[in-house]
Every structure is written in C-alpha cells, then in structure tokens.
Image 1 (cartoon, helix red, strand yellow):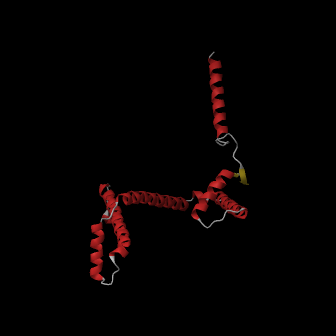
Image 2 (tube, rainbow, N blue to C red):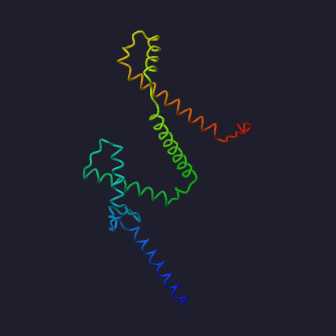
Image 3 (cartoon, helix red, strand yellow):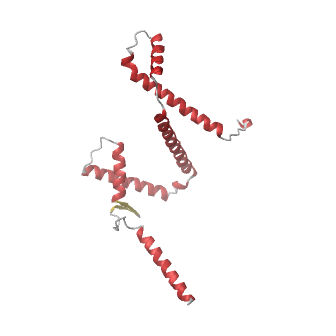
Length: 190
C-alpha cells in the first residue's frame, strides 16, 4: 500500500514537472513561439524581435518600417548576439571590471528613475501665482527698461519660476533624505 502511494506521488510529481516544463515552451495561446532566427544555441523569437523593433522605433521617430529595414534590424540583432556569445566564451562577463560597470549603470538608472518619479510628483504639486509672476516682472523691469510687456513674457516667466521651484523642492527633498540618513564620515581618511 505504502509503495503504491509513493509511486502515485512520484508519478504526479513527474507529470507536474512535465507540465511546467512544457508550459514554458509555448505561448499563452498554446502555440510554440515562432523562431525568427537561430544563432548557435540562442533562439530569437518573432515576439522578441517585434518587441525590440517596437522599442527602437519609439526612440527613432524617423524610422520607416520596410522589409529592408526589418532585415537590417535583424542583422544588427544577430551581430549583437554573436558578439555577446563571443564575449561570454572569453568569460568577459565574469570579470570584475564588467560587473562594476553593470553595477554603476544599474545605480545610475535607478537614481535617474527615482529622480524622474519625484520630479513628476513635484511638478504636479507646483504652481506659480500671478503675484509671483508680477513680482518677477517688476524685478526684471528694474534691471531692463526695454523689457517686452508682461503679456508677452508672462508664460516664459511662469515657466522659469516653476522650474526654479521644482529644482529647489527637489534639492530640499534630497537634503531631507540626507538628514534622515545615518551617515558617519571618518575625516582622518580624507
């Protein structure tokens, strides 16, 4: 009896592993992904190609999607994959210098995304009053008598004031983070 239960358990586990294994090989609709190109042991699927192509098209608004353009893009992806494979073969991806470069890139991207998120949040909450615009205009008039009318420069002044406020609020936010942090500096090592 105990052996039968054990066999059934192993059989169920085997089936589960088989299902999980095969589910990774198929698309959501049950079809196998279409392989556009095979580069040594790497399969470039049509779906992956289309995603990368769409991403590049977003960055280059002048890009014209033609059959030749698709072929050229595919050729670039193939070259890139061949170079990556060669770099891995030479174990360049395991060198400390490479890992540090990736870490620096990751950190800078993380910081950029954080600052972008915070700047967006600040921008949504930042406003400029008519009084601030008028005060800035009067200050500018005191220095430059030939200044165009307030009506002509109102939007420029408003935009400049908003940017100044956003920059100041972002700097204040960073300083507050610094104040909250537990920072200890060993001055003797400087």
